[in-house]
Image (cartoon, rainbow, N blue to C red; front, side, top):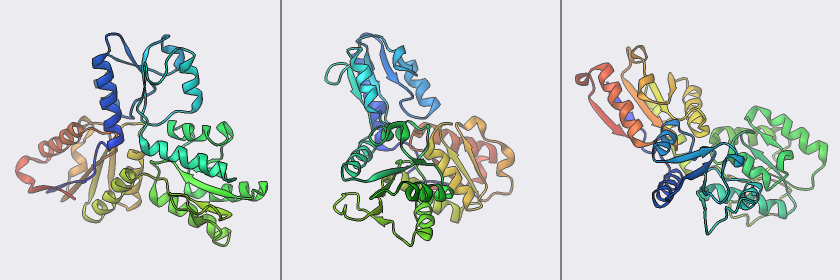
Length: 316
Protein backbone atom coordinates (compact mmCIF):
# COMPACT_ATOMS: atom_id res chain seq x y z
CA UNK A 1 0.00 0.00 0.00
CA UNK A 2 1.06 3.56 -0.70
CA UNK A 3 -0.03 6.77 1.00
CA UNK A 4 0.03 10.02 -0.96
CA UNK A 5 -0.30 13.25 1.01
CA UNK A 6 -1.30 16.30 -1.01
CA UNK A 7 1.40 18.96 -1.27
CA UNK A 8 -0.88 21.81 -0.23
CA UNK A 9 -2.86 19.99 2.45
CA UNK A 10 -3.59 21.95 5.62
CA UNK A 11 -3.20 25.52 6.78
CA UNK A 12 -3.06 28.32 4.22
CA UNK A 13 -1.15 31.50 5.07
CA UNK A 14 -4.32 33.42 5.91
CA UNK A 15 -5.35 30.90 8.55
CA UNK A 16 -1.82 30.68 9.95
CA UNK A 17 -1.73 34.45 10.29
CA UNK A 18 -5.12 34.58 12.01
CA UNK A 19 -4.08 31.98 14.57
CA UNK A 20 -0.76 33.74 15.17
CA UNK A 21 -2.57 37.04 15.77
CA UNK A 22 -5.00 35.45 18.24
CA UNK A 23 -2.25 33.64 20.16
CA UNK A 24 0.02 36.69 20.32
CA UNK A 25 -2.81 38.94 21.49
CA UNK A 26 -3.89 36.45 24.18
CA UNK A 27 -0.32 36.00 25.39
CA UNK A 28 0.28 39.72 25.78
CA UNK A 29 -3.13 40.45 27.28
CA UNK A 30 -3.54 40.25 31.05
CA UNK A 31 -7.34 40.01 30.82
CA UNK A 32 -9.65 37.95 28.62
CA UNK A 33 -9.24 37.90 24.84
CA UNK A 34 -12.40 37.55 22.78
CA UNK A 35 -12.83 36.29 19.23
CA UNK A 36 -16.07 37.04 17.37
CA UNK A 37 -17.31 33.84 15.73
CA UNK A 38 -15.07 30.91 14.83
CA UNK A 39 -11.58 32.22 14.07
CA UNK A 40 -11.23 29.36 11.58
CA UNK A 41 -13.59 26.52 10.74
CA UNK A 42 -11.88 23.72 12.64
CA UNK A 43 -13.16 22.36 15.94
CA UNK A 44 -9.76 21.09 17.14
CA UNK A 45 -8.07 24.43 16.49
CA UNK A 46 -10.85 26.27 18.33
CA UNK A 47 -10.50 23.92 21.33
CA UNK A 48 -6.72 24.50 21.45
CA UNK A 49 -7.24 28.26 21.42
CA UNK A 50 -9.87 28.00 24.16
CA UNK A 51 -7.33 26.10 26.26
CA UNK A 52 -5.04 29.13 25.89
CA UNK A 53 -7.66 31.38 27.45
CA UNK A 54 -9.37 32.71 24.33
CA UNK A 55 -13.13 33.18 24.59
CA UNK A 56 -15.23 32.72 21.45
CA UNK A 57 -18.37 34.85 21.22
CA UNK A 58 -21.16 33.99 18.79
CA UNK A 59 -22.59 37.49 19.04
CA UNK A 60 -21.21 40.97 19.76
CA UNK A 61 -23.57 41.19 22.73
CA UNK A 62 -21.42 38.54 24.45
CA UNK A 63 -18.30 40.72 24.28
CA UNK A 64 -17.85 43.10 27.26
CA UNK A 65 -17.28 46.83 26.93
CA UNK A 66 -13.70 47.76 26.03
CA UNK A 67 -12.65 44.08 25.73
CA UNK A 68 -9.58 43.01 23.75
CA UNK A 69 -11.06 41.45 20.60
CA UNK A 70 -9.87 39.58 17.51
CA UNK A 71 -11.85 39.38 14.26
CA UNK A 72 -11.81 36.08 12.36
CA UNK A 73 -10.13 35.31 9.03
CA UNK A 74 -13.39 35.24 7.04
CA UNK A 75 -13.96 38.99 7.07
CA UNK A 76 -16.76 41.03 8.63
CA UNK A 77 -19.39 43.47 7.37
CA UNK A 78 -18.95 47.13 8.24
CA UNK A 79 -21.79 46.89 10.77
CA UNK A 80 -19.58 44.69 12.94
CA UNK A 81 -16.95 47.42 13.26
CA UNK A 82 -19.62 50.00 14.07
CA UNK A 83 -21.16 47.85 16.81
CA UNK A 84 -17.76 47.12 18.31
CA UNK A 85 -16.92 50.82 18.25
CA UNK A 86 -20.02 51.43 20.36
CA UNK A 87 -18.37 49.17 22.93
CA UNK A 88 -15.13 51.18 22.72
CA UNK A 89 -13.46 48.38 20.76
CA UNK A 90 -11.52 49.96 17.90
CA UNK A 91 -8.53 49.28 15.68
CA UNK A 92 -5.23 50.59 16.97
CA UNK A 93 -6.22 50.00 20.56
CA UNK A 94 -8.05 46.80 21.44
CA UNK A 95 -9.40 45.48 18.12
CA UNK A 96 -7.14 43.12 16.19
CA UNK A 97 -8.29 42.33 12.66
CA UNK A 98 -7.29 38.86 11.42
CA UNK A 99 -9.22 39.10 8.15
CA UNK A 100 -7.41 37.20 5.39
CA UNK A 101 -5.95 39.69 2.87
CA UNK A 102 -7.39 37.59 0.04
CA UNK A 103 -10.87 38.07 1.49
CA UNK A 104 -10.19 41.80 1.77
CA UNK A 105 -9.23 41.70 -1.92
CA UNK A 106 -12.67 40.29 -2.78
CA UNK A 107 -14.31 43.08 -0.73
CA UNK A 108 -12.31 45.67 -2.68
CA UNK A 109 -13.24 44.06 -6.01
CA UNK A 110 -16.92 44.09 -5.01
CA UNK A 111 -16.77 47.77 -4.05
CA UNK A 112 -14.98 48.82 -7.23
CA UNK A 113 -17.40 46.92 -9.44
CA UNK A 114 -20.37 48.41 -7.64
CA UNK A 115 -18.89 51.92 -7.98
CA UNK A 116 -18.37 51.28 -11.69
CA UNK A 117 -22.11 50.71 -12.12
CA UNK A 118 -22.23 46.93 -12.01
CA UNK A 119 -24.93 44.86 -10.37
CA UNK A 120 -22.69 42.34 -8.59
CA UNK A 121 -23.81 38.73 -8.14
CA UNK A 122 -21.96 36.49 -5.68
CA UNK A 123 -21.20 32.80 -6.17
CA UNK A 124 -21.05 31.63 -2.56
CA UNK A 125 -22.80 30.13 0.45
CA UNK A 126 -25.64 32.20 1.90
CA UNK A 127 -24.76 31.55 5.55
CA UNK A 128 -20.99 31.58 5.21
CA UNK A 129 -19.37 34.49 7.12
CA UNK A 130 -17.25 35.47 4.11
CA UNK A 131 -20.30 35.72 1.86
CA UNK A 132 -22.13 37.74 4.51
CA UNK A 133 -19.17 40.13 4.80
CA UNK A 134 -18.90 40.57 1.02
CA UNK A 135 -22.67 41.05 0.69
CA UNK A 136 -22.50 44.04 3.03
CA UNK A 137 -20.49 45.96 0.43
CA UNK A 138 -23.08 45.26 -2.28
CA UNK A 139 -26.78 45.12 -1.41
CA UNK A 140 -26.52 43.82 2.13
CA UNK A 141 -29.09 41.09 2.75
CA UNK A 142 -30.56 41.80 -0.69
CA UNK A 143 -27.37 40.74 -2.51
CA UNK A 144 -28.12 38.03 -5.07
CA UNK A 145 -26.17 34.93 -4.05
CA UNK A 146 -26.02 31.79 -6.16
CA UNK A 147 -24.80 28.68 -4.34
CA UNK A 148 -24.55 26.07 -7.06
CA UNK A 149 -23.61 25.83 -10.71
CA UNK A 150 -26.99 24.26 -11.48
CA UNK A 151 -28.74 27.46 -10.36
CA UNK A 152 -27.61 29.29 -13.51
CA UNK A 153 -31.20 29.78 -14.69
CA UNK A 154 -31.96 31.77 -11.53
CA UNK A 155 -29.08 34.11 -12.41
CA UNK A 156 -30.33 34.52 -15.98
CA UNK A 157 -33.89 35.21 -14.80
CA UNK A 158 -32.60 37.76 -12.25
CA UNK A 159 -30.57 39.59 -14.90
CA UNK A 160 -33.33 39.59 -17.53
CA UNK A 161 -36.07 40.54 -15.09
CA UNK A 162 -34.27 43.61 -13.78
CA UNK A 163 -32.75 44.89 -17.05
CA UNK A 164 -29.44 45.83 -15.40
CA UNK A 165 -27.14 47.96 -17.56
CA UNK A 166 -24.04 46.14 -16.30
CA UNK A 167 -23.67 42.84 -14.41
CA UNK A 168 -20.58 41.22 -12.87
CA UNK A 169 -20.27 37.87 -11.09
CA UNK A 170 -17.65 37.28 -8.38
CA UNK A 171 -16.96 34.30 -6.12
CA UNK A 172 -16.39 33.54 -2.47
CA UNK A 173 -12.70 32.61 -2.14
CA UNK A 174 -13.36 29.00 -1.08
CA UNK A 175 -15.84 27.86 -3.73
CA UNK A 176 -15.31 25.12 -6.30
CA UNK A 177 -13.13 26.21 -9.23
CA UNK A 178 -14.89 23.67 -11.44
CA UNK A 179 -18.30 24.77 -10.14
CA UNK A 180 -17.61 28.45 -10.87
CA UNK A 181 -16.40 27.60 -14.36
CA UNK A 182 -19.53 25.54 -15.01
CA UNK A 183 -21.81 28.27 -13.67
CA UNK A 184 -20.38 30.80 -16.13
CA UNK A 185 -20.48 28.30 -19.00
CA UNK A 186 -24.10 27.37 -18.23
CA UNK A 187 -25.10 31.04 -18.16
CA UNK A 188 -23.25 31.75 -21.40
CA UNK A 189 -24.97 28.86 -23.18
CA UNK A 190 -28.28 30.61 -22.60
CA UNK A 191 -26.98 34.16 -23.14
CA UNK A 192 -24.87 33.76 -26.27
CA UNK A 193 -21.52 34.02 -24.45
CA UNK A 194 -22.22 37.55 -23.26
CA UNK A 195 -20.36 37.11 -19.95
CA UNK A 196 -16.68 37.95 -20.53
CA UNK A 197 -13.85 37.54 -18.05
CA UNK A 198 -12.82 40.74 -16.28
CA UNK A 199 -9.19 40.62 -15.03
CA UNK A 200 -8.67 40.71 -11.27
CA UNK A 201 -6.92 44.04 -11.75
CA UNK A 202 -10.27 45.39 -13.05
CA UNK A 203 -8.47 47.23 -15.85
CA UNK A 204 -11.29 46.56 -18.29
CA UNK A 205 -14.66 47.67 -16.94
CA UNK A 206 -16.23 48.46 -20.29
CA UNK A 207 -17.92 45.07 -20.78
CA UNK A 208 -21.65 44.94 -20.10
CA UNK A 209 -21.65 41.45 -18.63
CA UNK A 210 -18.56 39.99 -16.95
CA UNK A 211 -17.14 37.75 -14.25
CA UNK A 212 -14.04 38.02 -12.06
CA UNK A 213 -12.05 35.02 -10.82
CA UNK A 214 -11.87 35.76 -7.07
CA UNK A 215 -11.34 32.19 -5.87
CA UNK A 216 -8.06 32.36 -3.93
CA UNK A 217 -4.89 30.52 -4.94
CA UNK A 218 -4.72 28.34 -1.78
CA UNK A 219 -8.20 27.03 -2.64
CA UNK A 220 -7.17 26.40 -6.24
CA UNK A 221 -3.99 24.61 -5.16
CA UNK A 222 -5.85 22.27 -2.83
CA UNK A 223 -8.50 21.47 -5.43
CA UNK A 224 -5.82 20.87 -8.06
CA UNK A 225 -4.10 18.43 -5.71
CA UNK A 226 -7.35 16.45 -5.50
CA UNK A 227 -7.33 16.22 -9.30
CA UNK A 228 -3.95 14.48 -9.10
CA UNK A 229 -4.92 12.26 -6.19
CA UNK A 230 -8.08 11.16 -7.97
CA UNK A 231 -6.06 10.04 -10.99
CA UNK A 232 -3.71 7.95 -8.89
CA UNK A 233 -5.59 6.74 -5.82
CA UNK A 234 -8.52 4.39 -5.14
CA UNK A 235 -9.42 6.08 -1.85
CA UNK A 236 -9.17 9.71 -0.72
CA UNK A 237 -9.43 10.87 2.88
CA UNK A 238 -10.30 14.56 3.34
CA UNK A 239 -9.66 16.15 6.74
CA UNK A 240 -11.44 19.34 7.74
CA UNK A 241 -13.81 21.06 10.14
CA UNK A 242 -17.52 20.29 9.88
CA UNK A 243 -18.23 23.89 8.83
CA UNK A 244 -15.24 24.28 6.52
CA UNK A 245 -16.46 25.29 3.05
CA UNK A 246 -13.15 24.61 1.30
CA UNK A 247 -12.81 21.17 2.95
CA UNK A 248 -16.30 20.18 1.83
CA UNK A 249 -15.42 21.24 -1.72
CA UNK A 250 -12.37 18.93 -1.67
CA UNK A 251 -14.56 16.01 -0.64
CA UNK A 252 -17.18 16.83 -3.26
CA UNK A 253 -14.49 17.09 -5.92
CA UNK A 254 -13.12 13.64 -5.07
CA UNK A 255 -16.62 12.15 -5.30
CA UNK A 256 -17.19 13.87 -8.67
CA UNK A 257 -14.26 11.84 -10.00
CA UNK A 258 -15.97 8.66 -8.85
CA UNK A 259 -13.28 7.94 -6.27
CA UNK A 260 -14.31 6.54 -2.90
CA UNK A 261 -13.81 9.36 -0.41
CA UNK A 262 -14.53 10.15 3.24
CA UNK A 263 -14.72 13.50 5.01
CA UNK A 264 -13.43 13.34 8.59
CA UNK A 265 -12.45 15.72 11.37
CA UNK A 266 -9.88 13.52 13.10
CA UNK A 267 -8.08 10.16 12.97
CA UNK A 268 -10.56 8.59 15.41
CA UNK A 269 -13.19 8.55 12.67
CA UNK A 270 -11.20 6.31 10.32
CA UNK A 271 -12.76 2.86 9.82
CA UNK A 272 -10.84 -0.31 8.99
CA UNK A 273 -13.24 -1.48 6.29
CA UNK A 274 -12.47 1.61 4.18
CA UNK A 275 -8.98 0.28 3.44
CA UNK A 276 -9.77 -3.30 2.44
CA UNK A 277 -8.43 -4.03 -1.02
CA UNK A 278 -7.05 -0.50 -1.46
CA UNK A 279 -3.59 -0.01 -2.94
CA UNK A 280 -3.13 3.77 -3.02
CA UNK A 281 -4.55 6.07 -0.36
CA UNK A 282 -4.75 9.82 -0.92
CA UNK A 283 -4.82 12.18 2.05
CA UNK A 284 -5.62 15.87 1.86
CA UNK A 285 -6.99 18.56 4.17
CA UNK A 286 -8.76 21.90 4.07
CA UNK A 287 -7.03 25.22 4.63
CA UNK A 288 -8.01 25.35 8.32
CA UNK A 289 -6.58 21.92 9.22
CA UNK A 290 -3.32 21.87 11.26
CA UNK A 291 -0.41 19.61 10.28
CA UNK A 292 -0.64 17.54 13.44
CA UNK A 293 -4.15 16.36 12.49
CA UNK A 294 -2.88 15.30 9.06
CA UNK A 295 0.02 13.44 10.67
CA UNK A 296 -2.36 11.75 13.12
CA UNK A 297 -4.50 10.49 10.23
CA UNK A 298 -1.48 9.12 8.34
CA UNK A 299 -0.19 7.35 11.45
CA UNK A 300 -3.61 5.88 12.17
CA UNK A 301 -3.83 4.53 8.60
CA UNK A 302 -0.43 2.90 9.16
CA UNK A 303 -1.75 1.24 12.31
CA UNK A 304 -4.94 0.04 10.61
CA UNK A 305 -3.26 -1.61 7.61
CA UNK A 306 -0.07 -2.64 9.40
CA UNK A 307 3.18 -0.70 9.23
CA UNK A 308 4.92 -3.36 7.16
CA UNK A 309 2.30 -3.12 4.39
CA UNK A 310 3.01 0.52 3.55
CA UNK A 311 5.77 1.05 1.02
CA UNK A 312 6.08 4.78 0.74
CA UNK A 313 4.47 8.07 1.59
CA UNK A 314 4.98 10.97 -0.80
CA UNK A 315 3.67 14.45 -1.25
CA UNK A 316 2.40 15.22 -4.74
